[in-house]
Figure (cartoon, rainbow, N blue to C red):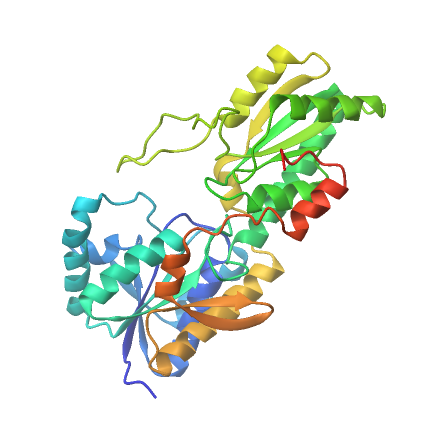
Length: 359
């Protein structure tokens, strides 16, 4: 058994549904072991800014409000990146914050980027760390699924359903731009479940002619509308990144490919009038669905169990139906998990007649 008495918990990166289930689950499991849980506000900022920003979490925090039904993060999150030349300085402030609170371990809810950065911080601070994967993109490596993905799929599928009705009413081809900077899991799953005609993801190149050919095939059946789903991270036919926008640390911010394709198709194809809808941050919302609530609860319990066993530098995950733990070194080394272009979802899309790109 471990000698842990105080742990911190924080959410890092973009928010998603299911975070509050995981936070409350950690509090419940840790409280039963007699540990004190410090909720760190706004990601790492709660431990690196002066004064520190945190609160001691108890069962009371989650007993009078149905947090399991809410999106977002009770603690607030941080998703602005950090410049490489500032990494050590922030890591040192993080360590100071950890020591000031007397924390024995930190549980981090984050994606692949957060796991990488927080592993460095915690190693430098000499503190145990357990990761819990969460992301609507489902691109955290090694684990089959991350918290937030299933709910985001539901939101996006509902959007495909809704857009389909207005597309039918106006006899248009509607483009829906979804999140997915480097990986197309969200767009692919939503397009399949929603019955889209075209789905474009970062992992597979496409051609304008390929899209037009599919729209022509739709019209040949007598149908007068179509739905096109695109990931925000896809490039132009020439392989160029469309957006020139950057965030606070100089990283490129994706978005706008839907409008780009809308203009291009309207210019080169007259069979349908094309319109675009960009879902944006609504994809991070929505009441957590069953799968995310269940996974968040089980991941939270597993994280506390691992700490109690003295484990550190591991990430909880789901592999072939079993809850397990992966070395953070292996998680970081694996990098972003993209869509396997030979997987059964891609095969199904092709067999169902969807244009998925040039394979």
